[in-house]
Image (cartoon, rainbow, N blue to C red):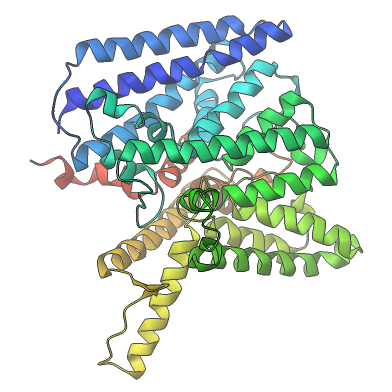
Length: 480
């Protein structure tokens, strides 16, 4: 491993983050807020830290190794959250650094869990930065940065493998930098479309931009205390449903559709599974809410929004689903584990893994009947390699094990069963709100400091697909 190369790349990452931080103080000046200086301090420290890392770490012709990639990505997220929290710290938005770091990690990992009790009294520049870090984290700060790595003479495929979610990395174009730029063009185009539609539907421009940032990132931070329910506008809800659904789809599929390959929508097995699973969950929630709302239209309205929000791991709400009957709440808890598609901005286990795991389980039953048969697991016409199947099985087992251990740890802080379980599921799945004490109308402020750090680790594990972070704790990783 080349630590000089690793920290030099972190320096460029911090400079990029500092430049992104220049937009919120402009918002502060426009609205006449005092928070502009808080951002100026944060910008200065972040950019100077980046410059120091670059100057102290000489350039090298060495390519990024497989192990370098894991360290760069993991360290990049930790540092981005630390320096991204500086405006919150200088503005005294939060009482402690732990709260500021929790909120920032929640933003960059697109989790959407918050420790804020009254969001609407915050300066607009703070709200803007809070939303913007989700948008940056949605596609991945590192993925965005590798578009410029060729300028530094450094290859980026190792970073792409560590950053892009999913069991199989799909390259749209031969060069990794071109792939990164292609994904971001799609991301920006969809974001612009949502801003315009929300603005036309009745949101003011500031709210439209902030909610677009957190919708496309499937993050869920809102500028309102009651999230999307505050607007009470069916048209806004429909637009957000469409873009939450879109953000939960593999962006490589979006790229193909943008280039006229519409047939991909009906040939992509994961996309079909994603649609069918979401529709089934919506119908079940709708049916179970009929007795609660007494209206088929209202039941469908709230069920569709909430099912889409939770399955895509966005975390918006249009109703206090904590008051719903047990059956729809349990369905939402299941959706927290499923998540969106691989290659999307969503979290969770991912639809492709669920689909492959189901196929592998069926194959084991098939082998019991035909023990000598040869039956590869396929997605469409492609056979899935056995090492990929082993990897996804290991991932799911680790995911569930971490969930159980996390729930056990959170129960030590005196939380009730549903609060402990759902706050871990919501953090590990990068969803945000859970049930009971961390429901859509609640927050994470009451959780003790140690509990917040446990949830911070869970958010990072979920965003980095577990293996990227856990592999750093394997002794063999550090051996030559």
